[in-house]
Image (tube, one colour):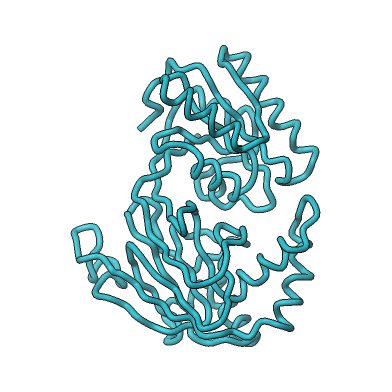
Length: 312
């Protein structure tokens, strides 16, 4: 499918000033210049409230061709959250991690993104929602979310992969792996989701785990695939749970996911659901697409085909 009205002339670029290296802002300027050369009206904004207001006005009047999320996965999620369903979102990946862009084959090349906007081809994807906030890739509860919490609590500017070393070491020393109670609301069997073709679709699921991931798209940091069969357009979330908590088991799980053999393990469970609730008796953080989300309890649901992404 494609952008509904290719005659619309306005493009808004939301640039996250904290995403990626400072020199990458020149890529945003090049994209804006290429779009203007093509005859489009372009504005670059860094203030999200102003961006959201202008996007809504242009969308309602039929003048908005697309918006551009220039940043990482968190920027794309924020732009999706602050724009109406049906608004076409182009991605200019500039952040430390750009997992959605990699999943869709989108590069940080201004000419490629410009051509995609001009061609107007789009793809519809599901989104997840937590406490009214959208996520596009996954929710993580447990050790990884504790690392994210520590990283952002001490963040003072741009981050890079080495920024994670200190919070990882802190979490290794201090995280206690408390029990997480997981209550999954599974869908009724359908032609798109039946137990024979997609194991994990079935009745209600209630279990206890140490690590929990609610996955919309399969790609995670370093190319890891916790739920390798997850699809972003099936109206379901893939909930993966790991049952044991310790540094040793964490390394074992990491190795298993990297090798793609964890799915058959007895202490890993996978369910496909429309809604899931995660609880704990102690404060446990959760993360959304690599950004801090808050603390348990949390209720997570899928919004089928909520996102419209411009693709190359």
